[in-house]
Image 1: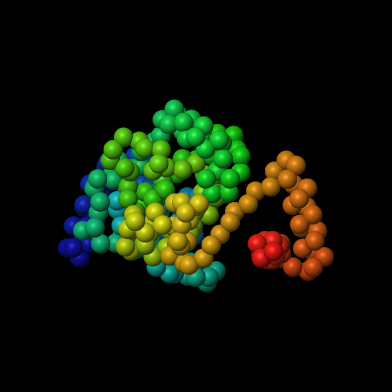
Image 2: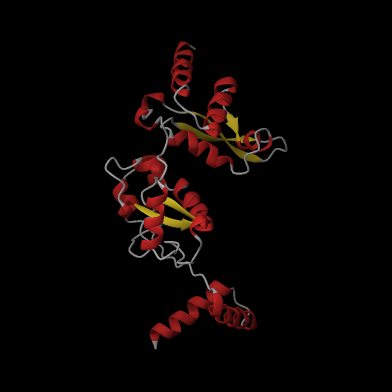
Length: 242
């Protein structure tokens, strides 16, 4: 009991240094109730993506444990409580850095307005600056902003990357930047794994006149009663083998 009281006192002290509203709500709820569920984060606080709220806390260097509970309907869901507070990374209490507009503009020009993952072209406002190595693993680089450490990703690919990273054993346990650098989500054009799985992936976007090609592929896939991704892989294999 004394240990728990001491831990809560330490967390309250750390909380004073955190301004992020979403992270503060998670921390304050756990302090008051011992844990917070994804149902509570969604229904009580209005967060449609509860894992993102938990990730906010972790990005401030405060460890959280994920465990399973039953929601109000009896369905199994995730819940969060404080982890080993000796693992607090105090250097992160100010949160991740924000990026100057001129830095994003330079990245946008360097990448020709393309998402680093799907290569789709977007207006700058629809692309987000992301760390190649997740912030949760390596934090922010200590030296001056280097474009090589970051990538521009569209909203859809950023959500997919977040989900994949958050379920990766390296993200959860080892936190090795070198492992991340060999991952698809860090280097889509030169990688050996995707979240430690030995698989390969190609995200493709058809736009403008290319849409006609997509529609033909879709029509042929339907005629062959095959899912489109499977049909595309067979077509590529046939082309490569010729």
